[in-house]
Structure formats: structure tokens, C-alpha cells
Length: 331
Image 1 (cartoon, rainbow, N blue to C red):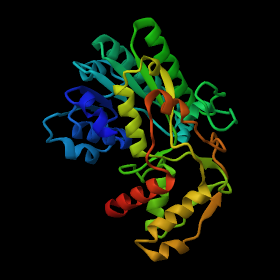
Image 2: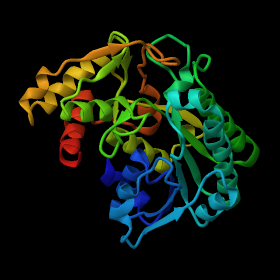
Image 3: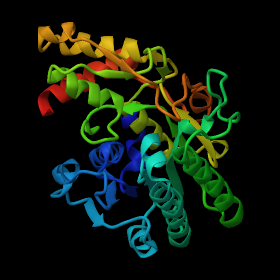
Image 4: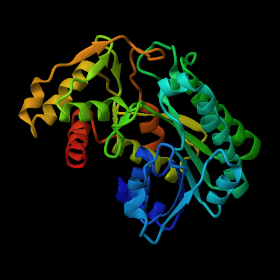
């Protein structure tokens, strides 16, 4: 897939906001490896300098230390850019419940700044990280792009507002956009530390340290866990597609299968025990469910397959194996 897109990516100039983050740094790496010039805009609120250190000496990489809440920073970053991959955001449902104002400032005001800067710079396409949280209280599975419910958290509201703004900017100013609704992305460089660490890197770190992972609820809640390389594939397809029907809409970015938290924990123990056999005997603990968490999440990826030729390569088992190998070397 990468080889087929290489000619389209080569010699283009791509801005990755949040490029020092988990997903952003993987995008930067892939773009550079395929001949693109990359500008990374990051304020390092959640991004890590170590994630972009390998690129700093690359002649086609530029780091702008700035904040999407500052319109001038956004305009500087968008100068002479062909495509924007907007990943910068404050993630986490619990974080948004604890501090809705900052989540809104970054995820809504910052997003609007980036749209304005992209419009003014006449970028060819604005591809942005949307979220599966937009499905809210709609219970039907699998999740299909044109049917959503009411948001269940401030974070979910911000990501839905992004979709509304993107639609208006296309209709009002002709800025082509594509929104990518990420479903529980995991993989190399995802931070296992901090109060809002995602479940997979957190559990991996705990198991490596012989600590018991704590599941919210009885473990029956399920998610469509999505390995990072599937997400990178979708972003590249979104900026390179020539299909006019594929533009100015949103897509689920997932594998299209769901795994319960109990099943996930057993997979992690299985793969980690190849490095340390005692890990398979570590106890799993439970506590109450979190406010704002939806019970089940499963994506339909039919739309992405039909309009973008999306073909996710990594299922949960293959992705966990890759992720665990990376964490074992880097934690």
C-alpha cells in the first residue's frame, strides 16, 4: 500500500499538528520515509520530544514549537503546505470531565484556528482526527458513520463540533476535509505514563512491573482496538485519494472487530509471558465503571473500504504482538 502511494506523497509538503504525539510521530516517520517534506507543530503539552528526536537531523523535517490556540502559530505552520494532518488535541474522556474548559479551548478553538489558517494558506486538503466518542449513547452495533447519538462527555462534544466546523468550511470556503473517527488506537510510542494513559500501554507497563492491571467494571465492556499502522494507512489514503466522492465526509478508522477488556488483558499476558513467564500468573483486579464510558464499541469500516480502498492489515492479536515487542524494548 505504501509503495502505491509513494509517488503521490513524494515531494509534497505535509503539516502534522501534534506531530510529537503518539499518532503524529508515526505519521511524521512514515511521510519522511516516503519522500514527503514534513512540518511538525507541537506545544509538547502531551507530545514527547523523544518522539521527534530521530527526525531532527532529517533535511525534510521542520519542527515548529507552537500552540494551535495561537492563530499566528497556525498560520506560520501552514505556510506553503499541501496537506494538513491535524492530530493535535487533548484526548481522554476523564480529562475532559475534570477540565472541560481546557479541552474545549484546544479541541474546538484550536481546531477552528487550524481551519482558518489552512483556508488562508489554500492547502489542498485538511484531514483531521475525529473520534468514535461521537457515537455517544447510540447503542446499535456496528457503528455506521451517518448514525450517531448524543455525546456522553465534554471530549465527545468537542470532537463532534470539529466535524460540524469542517463541514461548514467546505461549504462556505471550499476547503476539502476528511474526518477520521479513531477507535481505540494503540501501538509503538503510545505513552504508558500519566493520569490519562490509555488502557493498553498502561496495562503493559503494569504487567512488566508485575503489578495487577485494574479493569473498570467486570471486563465485559468491549472496544474495537486499532493498531497504529492501520491508522497511518488511513491518513495516507485520505491525503492522496483522487476520488471526489471520498472527500468532505467522515470515516471510521478501526479494524472492524471488538475485544472485551478481559480478552485484551489475557492477550497482553500471553504475549508478554514470552519474555517473562511469570507474567501469565499476575492477578487481574476490578473497580467500578468510569463516568462517560460507553459499554461497547465496534466499527463498520465498509465506507472506508469502498471509498478509500482501506485494507487494515493488523487485527488485535497481530497488533498486540507488535506493540508488546516494542514496549519490552523501550520500557
